[in-house]
Image (cartoon, rainbow, N blue to C red; front, side, top):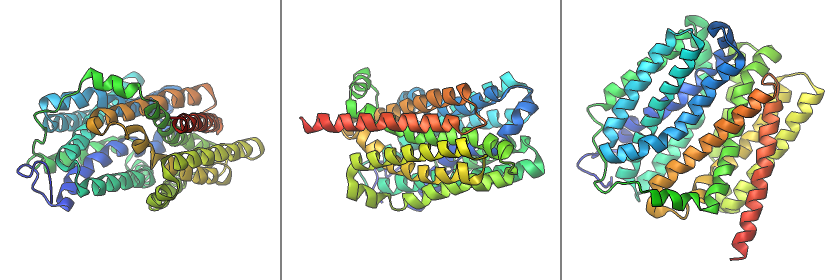
Length: 399
């Protein structure tokens, strides 16, 4: 196995993945395992659904924004300290959440939990860049990481529903804390420092990225796709459990079908990209999302909430999400191979701010127990993405 730091990371690829992957999964599981109990949390915390929505929104925003904080910090003090510190913060916040019933403290602890998750992600991906940059192993690692993230939304809510049913909502956060402790105990003696002595982040690099039109066009497209899924899981518990009358387990299975469509579609992503190219995939993805929003609108106007009116259109949206997310990173970062770390951090940070800010706004302003927030976000952002991609194509054809 080739690597930039063979002395520190002389591991086989399967062993390295066994060290890396759990941190990636934990960050996502912190969001998805909690979804089945979201409708019950206003009563548990004696608060409103809008406040509970913050526990989803702040987690999402901090996962992205935290990369801007912890990325440069990991360049300064190293990947290992950030990984260990972030995991311990995640553990402490998870156990604290299990025994908290005050709304303001619960929201604050979710933010702290997300900070720990963000630190874990930064340390993990920075280590991958350090050790596997410009090697064939990097493509294998990134593709497997994306596949794993598609599995978590499928299985996380089902696991959460079962745990909550038999052990109570607090057990969800105790489970997260225990899993994080076990993951850290396995990684602690084996996760060696990989930071390069020359790792730095300069303000001139940040400015160069933020002035790039392709960066913004494809970052907005990424926010469109991820935001559609974010608004879906923000509204789905209330629509399907309260509106359609599904049980928590029934909701989790219905939710998992959307993730399953994403997983199956992702298997063929390489073929789509080869055939249509980066702009073609993004354009088709936005069109599919726009059609999905139209079908959701028809379902909301003419039918009662059900699997057919809410989940089936999301199967179509899942196709569009994969079409877009399979190309947006390359589209946004194609001009920054010399500063990929900074560009990646900014890409995910800006995307999370778009998703968290606009996505939360539509859920709060519109009725979060209906499909209207999902219709507004998916339709509006898909239309904006189409306009931006078309404009970018015209500009590039003239140069």
